[in-house]
Length: 356
Image (cartoon, rainbow, N blue to C red):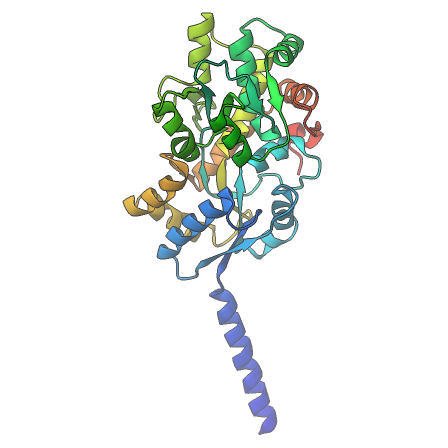
């Protein structure tokens, strides 16, 4: 009798464990500490998705290595349970191109991607040339070089012109650069759209600063960029042609298109392991979020008026972006960022060869 009871208890215990595992919460790995921009965005998105899920999404913060460590750990081990997702930001995308310690690949199933924009401003009466240094600021540096230096230049000529015209200020966090810009100690600024409206737009309204340029938004079906309706008329390409009479082109411009497309085209994203059986349920929840006005408002309050590409559309979006990573454009980017910008950028053969 005791043996029968013991066997029953084992069966009941195993059944309860299986049921519990089946209903276990989803995990969303966030590769930074609580309170960071990606963390806040992830919490908002998870909260909205949880309205449409029986099993809830729980955030797990894995900071370290400038957001690399957490995504690496997810890539190498955590993704394999099929229920653990990862959130990535534009910084992860830049580091995918430039940092040899990165193990992640972007060869995952997309839950959802938000392509955003970065808005540059300058102090009124200045050329904006005293600008915050950072590897993640490479698209702004390249745009400034082209706007200031003009067309028909070689890569080496752009490098010399940048060093001659731009003071690339190192050593401060974004919030510190923001303060120096407000005080007029630096003359150039770059912010995401929500931060621009909160911190920089009041200076514009007071006449102390002016909107300078933005990078446009990538069309996932063509790989081309178009103007941002939130800031119409200020796309870099539009301003370049107005100023110089021709459209930007050449090796340097191709490298600029590459880095802005990768950083801003994957500015906010959630991924899950390939062929996860939970992907469709999570995508369905996010689709409902993307169609709910209250959910849209909650997310846009953080990042601005930008939409989603979800599921297979997100996978195709990634394919288009990665198709811009040509050998020549990539080598030009690494050359400019590692020498002129003096950032820790290294050429990674796997990026171009598309290896795992």
